[in-house]
Amino acid sequence: MKRDILPLSTPKAKIDDESKLAFGTEFTDRMFVMEFDRKKGWHSARIQPYGPFSLDPAATVLHYSQEIFEGLKAFRRSDGSIALFRPQDNISRFNRSATRMCMPEVDEKFFLDSLLELIRLESDWVPKSEGTSLYIRPTMIATEAFLGVRPADQYLCYIILSPVGAYYKGGIAPVKIWISDHYVRAAHGGTGEAKTGGNYAASLMAAKEAAENGYDQVLWLDAREKKYVEEVGSMNMIFLYDDKIVTSPLKGTVLDGITRRSVLHLLKDMGYKIEERALSVDEVMEGAGNGRLKEAFGTGTAVVISPVGSFCYKDKCVQLGNGEPGELTMKLYKELTDIQYGRQTDKHDWVVEL
Ligand code: COI
Image 1 (cartoon, helix red, strand yellow):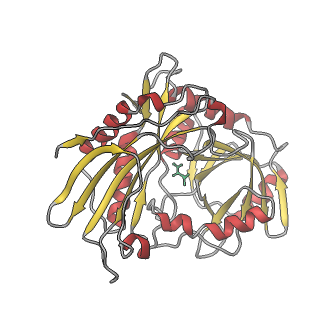
Image 2 (cartoon, rainbow, N blue to C red):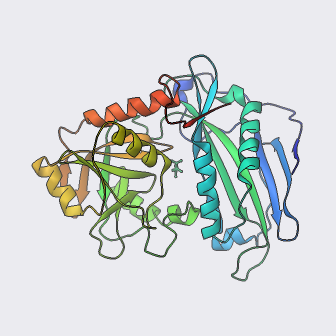
Image 3 (spheres, rainbow, N blue to C red):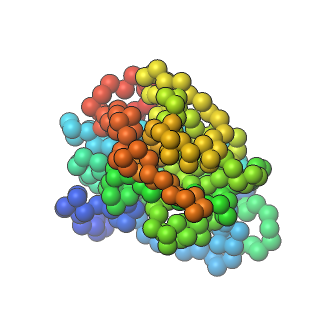
């Protein structure tokens, strides 16, 4: 399929003070777009000026949430070059989400080439300061105007770019985690492992409850027994428990995080024993109290690695250690970001240079 590049008339002003970069509030000048029709397949691929779409009010996505997305990052290295972290993994997860949501898959090579071409054109937007990056958001929506419930026959797929700073306002400061004993995120057989907007919309009520109680994020329990910890909405959770690494297994209700996968790989390289097993909320709360739970952190593209400072469950709140980021958490943060920013050799072949 060919890809057109449409002219850009007025580039936007870029933020000069990169310390003011927030998460996902600024967007670059251009975006990639392609369209799908059951008869024609994918067509009309182009890089065009960033701007609003026109959608029929009956478009399926607006009624039944047939939507998927991804999140990955491009990093500016000290020599000025730009590198992406494991983009093929994000694109193949995009296709797995598409299959789950009855949406058409994309051609992985064409999609990666389009992504790289877009970033080349927008390379001036990749920020330079420590901790900043260009966040990449591939998205697919069902656009067919039809109110019956069935997979749509028309789709729009696009990629937008956003120069970002830290996801949480406090940067790498420890987050306070609220464990929900009422709301659940994903049930077996549901869409928990797909990156689809509805999972995030469904999480908002519990996030509101957490915020009203002074907590930053919600840790979800399994839907069947409300006993085992699963994930936090924007990150997977990893625990250092009795000198072993414990994390929820991927059994359909937890997102197969690319940062999770990378961090587990680094931990294996460091010689840690990894247990992908159900970890009960009682083990977490008691472990934080009696010192068996030494560290806990979230992993995700947007957050990178986010240390946990405390947990609150029902009427009990516990601080983890002294409430400061753990030693292993910080070591992993350094190791991972050193690979992403090119300060360390990429021996796992995770980095794709532009
Ligand atoms: C990411 O980490 O890229 C995500 O997609 C999480 C997001 C909802 C901010």
